[in-house]
Length: 251
Image (cartoon, rainbow, N blue to C red; front, side):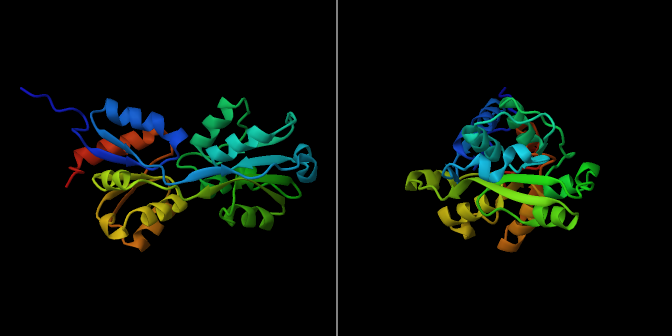
């Protein structure tokens, strides 16, 4: 008698940047699935920034928009952050990365995280005259900053990385096309995937996405089946991957 494994060979396309995909890929394989790693974003550091010009030490609050924002901020930081600066994570993945780099997490929204969840918590409503530095990638959304400005905050941006379109071999692309479901972590990542693979070969596949915003964007592109995770952690993604198999995700 052959025992059916949890994922029963379900093929999952993991599009996270290479350095952030390993844990999820290992979990998929351990569950009996096939992890197909195809990073769709190259994360490239932006040229060194001047702390004195940005007045990092004078900020009342620093908001980190992503894991990569934390990584590239810490790679360039030359000073110790004062205890009176409130350090804010936009979600659980960002918070975990902050802790890995020895940063406090003073404020973090409840799942699913994201700008909308962050703006709903009391600490982000009481920001009149506060100096807030938003650490992000190049060309991110303006919704968070615009809302905080409307609430009376003084906002500065620090863009510490940019997103590029990686080159992938024909063999990698053809393998990716065999996936039963796809994990997408950002709108930019979905756009890049659709540049690497013809969108007509993707829209019938299940998408596992990190936010309602990404889901709505995917629907406008013609994707038919999207599910939003409760948060961006590997555990939350695996919960949806397992559900995908129970729902016969390979059809």
